[in-house]
Length: 90
Image 1 (tube, helix red, strand yellow):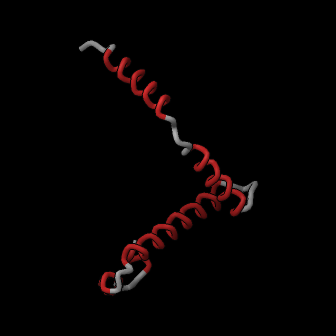
Image 2 (spheres, rainbow, N blue to C red):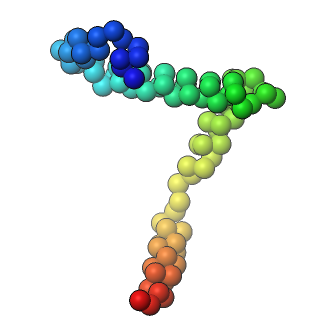
């Protein structure tokens, strides 16, 4: 990915490390790559929504799915899974 964007990324990486900006630059590059991917998906697959509306919708849905599970639910799920695994006989 770096060679795609920069003619000589090795000097860029060296200067980023020297200036203690390597991590922030990689984060920005990752965000740009994700944005480009999302735009390509929208461009080729979505035709009934604007890009911003579609992007807001997928990010909202991702946040809604990442709701934390409480400890009781976690224990119940682990116990059910353990029971299922223990019920198998070789």
